[in-house]
Image (cartoon, rainbow, N blue to C red):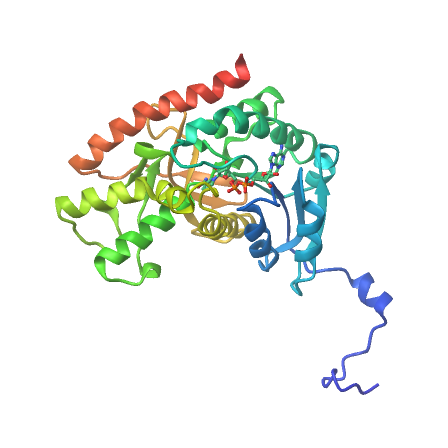
Length: 338
Ligand code: NAI
């Protein structure tokens, strides 16, 4: 048969034969909190990711609407929606990667820690679902306070006997994205050429940009160092204040979450040399969790890198970061142990 849309004269398949061939190969990804400010653009961007074959969108509100909307995009991933806790386990069934942006965001005047009471319980419930339906999945945890929600997730997984520290990743990518942007601005470079390691955690002084390790190599005056460090640490608050009560970063966060999730998927696929910063179980400091560069592979964060040489400003910053981090980590652990 000749067909105008089939110039190579490939055999013309019936719709049934096409269906039998099946969809694109790729990974199964669930987004929990998919109808939220981060969740919606994140779902859209993941639907555009060629490594995703199945995309499950779960929320306690509005999941059907977001799913219907996104499912009309003519990209490869098959999209399915799940609404309410009764559908949590089916949403998670067989997933390779679970991304969690569920929970309340900050309003002006709030710290990330002020979100603890609500978000801790949400993260616990969602992790219990992971235990039942996809205990081997890689988890990207976005819900704040990340410094406490990652230890909460770890405790839930430990209690269920399925904890694999390599597969639980707190998402600090937005701090890196902001650092690359702000440093590029000071250097007059394209942000895509700049790479800034950001270590520690994801709140205030626990966010520690290592400006002495910026690539391309460059040096900063004490004033530039002070300005950049503060701006990177307060980047979230800058957005919270500008939104004036309408939430926190959502669009830049969705961008950062997809950048990180894509790196995780390339790692799962077996690509070599995938290195990003994340908040993970760690022996780099005396704290049980810490954000540093990690190498992402088939097993998740397969290698956790050391901090590398720090300058005096960074050593002082590290001590401050560790002090606050220790408290936030303990708070998360005790939430489950109590
Ligand atoms: P949002 O309020 O717009 O959306 C949150 C979504 O979670 C809502 O759709 C809500 O229905 C859903 N949700 C609430 N309880 C749930 C449950 N039990 N199960 C499933 N879904 C549930 O908030 P937004 O702006 O999207 O922020 C989400 C979280 O991400 C916040 O905790 C925020 O602090 C955090 N965040 C983290 C960043 C990071 O760098 N790691 C950056 C920006 C925000």
